[in-house]
Length: 192
Image (tube, rainbow, N blue to C red; front, side, top):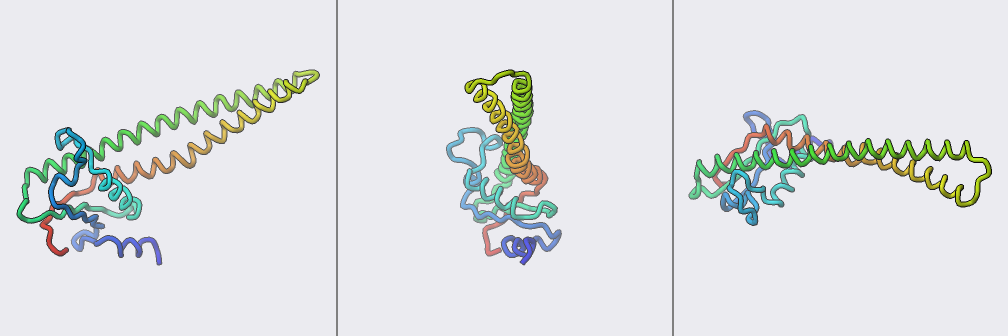
């Protein structure tokens, strides 16, 4: 079974536009946000479990597909003002997550550059020292080998950061960028 068929079984599709629907049932508007956060709703953090669920759904639904978020609440607590404030709060939270992702990527790129620069210096130092050294004592030989090991280790760390850690972070950034453009709806909590 293809990934797209598996996803179709996990998430409903909006028949009007074909968008995948991420559906969340709530008892109250406050369940969207972290109860420990004393900020105003527009600046509150999303409940960590909800954020994890949205992130996981973002990975499961192919990136080329449209996504919509639906919050289902009891009909008797409908409040358009709370809905609008909640939508703003959720979008602001996505922007904040993106800010931290971008900061992490910049930090990783600086580390990659430093590792490559220092690693190459170690390797050049080891080769030059070995080439120009006359008789090599045991301690001097150990020092040269240490430079080789350190240089190759730093180059491996740069490689690992670029191809593994940064790749995962870029995937996460794509998920949250998509969520910035996602429509959020509040619906009555009836059988859907």
